[in-house]
Each structure stands twice: as C-alpha cells, then as structure tokens.
Length: 533
Image 1 (cartoon, rainbow, N blue to C red):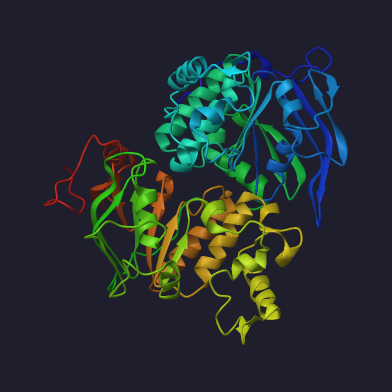
Image 2: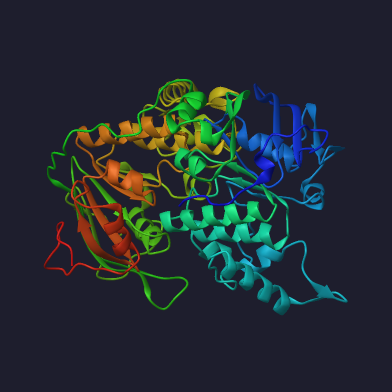
C-alpha cells in the first residue's frame, strides 16, 4: 500500500523553533546483571511514525516502558514539547497524552472486552456507570478503525489476535496523542496488518505521533518515516527510512548480513507420524463447533502448515491435539501408531510430542521460575535430572547452560534469571530450545517466531528444517504468510474450523491462499492436493 500521506513534521527543524513532541535524553536503565538501556537518546517529531528496531533483548520495550512510567531510569531526562517532565507511573503518562499497546497484553482475563477498554476511566453519573454511552463510543471506534471486537466477550475466551485489538481500542478510547505500539502486528493476519498500517498513517496525518516497535522490516519500510536502531542496549543510529534498504536495516540491527529466504532441500516424507480423524471441538463462545470434523495426516520428514486467519479454530485444534482441550466423541488422534486421544499431556510429552504454544506466558512458561527450571519442566523426573526423587541441580544447570549458549538466549543472570524478567523474544527462544532439544517424533509449532528478530527467525527456521531432516514430523500453525510459504512442504487452510484447501507452496500464491482463508473459495473433498475449486 503506497503511503500518500504528507507530513511537514518530517522536515528537519531546529529544536528551538520546533521542539520534539517527545525527547528522551541519555536514558540509562539497569537490571540485575544487565544494562538494558545504555545512554540512549530518542527524539520523536509531531505527526511522524518513528520505528524502534533491534534484536530480542536490545532494550526496545524497556525504553518504551521508561517513557510509559513502568520503569524509572537510573540516568537521563524526558522532555515533552521541549519541557522537562517526570513520569512516575502510567497515570502520569496518560495525563501527558502517552498511551501504550504492550507486547504482552495488560488485560483482566475475567472482565469483558468493553470493561477492559474503559477500565480506569469509566463514564459515570453520581457513581453509576454509563456503560451504554461507553459501548456506543467503543463500537464507533471499532468500526472506524476496522478493529471488529465483541464487547461482551470475556477476555479469557477470545483469541490472542482479538486481545491485541482490545489493547489498541483501549488506547484510542483515551484519545492519547503519543501512541506506543510494542510489536502490534505479531498476532494479526496479513489483511489486518495492512489495515493497521493504514490506521497508523491516518493517525499520524491527524497529528498523532507514533513510536512503533517492530522486528518486521517490511512493515518498517512500509509505514515508518524514521527508524532508530538499538543493539545490546546501545544506540546504533537513526535513519530516514526512505534512504535505506531492508538489508541495510537488518545489518544495523544484528551486526551482520541476514538471509531472508529459508534454505531447505525437498522433503522426503516417510511413515505417517500423526493421523487425525474426525476431530471435533466445541466452541466456548458459540453454538457452532470451533473445530468441525477435521481429518489430516503429517508424515515423518515433512513440514505441514495450517494457515488461516486468527480465530478460525486453530487455537482449539492445537489445544485438543496437545491435551489442553477435550475433543468430542468420535474424534481420534494417533501418534506414531498409538491412539493418544484420551491420553494425558505428560503421556504425549514423553511419547514424542513437542509443543511450542501460541501463548508463551499462559502455556509456555512458569514466569516465576528461573530459566533453568523452565528448561527442564517436562524432563525433571528423568534419570539424567533426578536421583531417588531429588533433583540433581548441577545436571540441570549444565544442561540449561548448554541450551542457553546454543540458542543464544540472552538473560541478565544466566540460568538463574527469572523468566518473567526476560524480553519476550528471549522467553520464546527458551521455549523453542526446550521443545526442540528434547526427543520428539512430532513438533507442533504455533507461531514459533512470534516476536523474534530477523536473525533469530533465520536461526529458528534452520532448526525446524533440521528437525524435519532428522526424521520428525512438523505441524506448523502460522499467521505469517511469508513463513507459511517459505517453510512449508504442504499447506492446509483452515476456515471456520474446517480444512478448506490443501496446497503445494511451490505452485500456489499468497493471493490464492488469501481467498481460501477469507472463505471466498473452498476445495471439494474429491479435489484435494493442489487443485483449486
């Protein structure tokens, strides 16, 4: 989508005549064992979209958390419109017109979407809530920005993508003029991302100023005016996006050239490793089934990807497959020849199923455990890690240190770092290290590169291909069409809980997949393969 919005604020101007709407000067923020921000200066102009780019753990989210009042810096000052300000907490930030959509959502699970959006600024008369008025405004914003949400749904029952939209609406509802987006597209579909880019350009044209954290270079090239790059907590430089290439930005970010295509040999499918017959899962939200009579096979030595727009049954499908959700009678899941439909999660884990979950906080990690404890979560009872019922902590430490080095997991205190204190990308790398390293016949990978930088994505894709080539079956669930096309040997499209098409990535196109993902086309059962209905 071409950017036709003009922004006079992009022209360089002396600070004394046109002060930056936000200026963070010489910010230093330290955590135990690590300097997350080391003397960083960031300048945001009014009406611009300013991208913040860096590897996982480079300090991007920390810097934005300082601006939003979640952290207090050890050194440095913040100026708004040329005047020094002190931001002690998010309420101070909101009072200054600063809003933030966090990478890990700040939502109350047991509240409705509407209650989360208006939380803290509920309209009331004499202490009585005026929810009707709030609902009307939320629905107007939702329609205006294409962020379709169900205001009455409980947050714990909606998809990750819908939670993302709730966060964005929360910020728009507060009329913030400085908008911080921390990885806002990580869980959105290509169509939703295009729409969000359009929304961001429109907001900037209205005079709002946007700070946009992203690992996705295509999005930065598409929407940002300027880009500030951080590496290992230090400032690398600020560039006009129009003056640089994607390759130059990636080299600034990771300090080396990065390959954007996945190198892999043709698949050599072997025996059927996963055989699913008539899998049906009830929906918690609707009377219709979330997953409706799905049958599929994945063979050893191949990567099969389920593509689709978020909320079309992928989450429920994976939950039933891995044991987090109950499948309906008549469903059958066979792993390496054994019926595991009613087996426990541990049974599946110890009999060859590895699972990289969609939500790393809810299902991937125990956040208050250390890095090493999370790494052995599914193996602590094995002879290598325990003796006579006592955990052999020296062996756990040795194993964890090896994985931390192999997968480049960056943490302030090494193996004893609390998982909660790590960056989102390094939390993700911890889960991937744990799941890929333990013995497995089937890898179920849901959004495996969500929130990872280009260097880490390159490495993880190589690891997944190596898993395939070692003879494991891989079932990939991804919303990233680039990832789907690059990594898959076969593609299945899921729409409204059903498989509506099967494709060969070498002979199909993103546009063709998009039609099936949106429900505009569907293959008949007789066609299958790469035939198009």
